[in-house]
Length: 287
Image 1: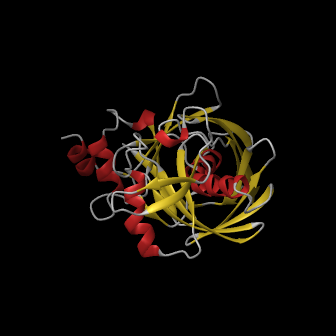
Image 2: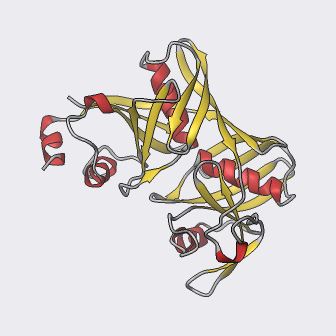
Image 3: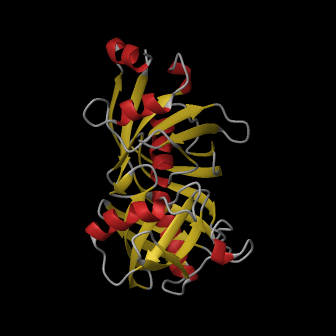
């Protein structure tokens, strides 16, 4: 029997599964089936609880196209709530090991349940040695990037354990995000692909963004994208160090960008439902 829980952070939804419930490792085909909104559970990704060697809990994160992600801010909040609500975590603060590093999660508990989670996401860095014009040791801040359709954008590369490419615009446009997002995601400068954010500063402490997520496409919200965009805004002098409100189609997160470039994410989380996969569906997954 394969049990699962489904949760979301501002409309960015994930399915949580415990590896011990699986009879075989997840494959890209199985992940795509599970995430399919018509033929599966439907989600923006899979959160797989695994053993940890350097933290209290271990987590692997999979995109709906079957690829694996290093880190996810919304995914970590959903996973943290799952660990507390399902009585795996004994304290409200604990560490989680991801492919993108170890993070600390703090659950805010009300009436025995978690509705808000703070995540220490690690330090933002701005080096992307795979971009030829940047050089191996130079920070990629305001660097021109030419796309395959002839468009040239000024971009800032950021990593918070997973890669991001931020471009600042005067006007946010869903159609432009959907058109240019995949061109940036799959640009030869990013051999492992990248998450993409189109950002418009609203005030010194407020940023509006649209997101094209690596392996998922246009996304209502993203925690790590919010961290990357906020850090890039501070680096470019568009926002100040401290708390930055990041507004997305799905809602708002608060990102704290400290002078040492360590980043903290805080925001709401909700579990939608719990269930089990039918024997028929599991058999079809394993064919």
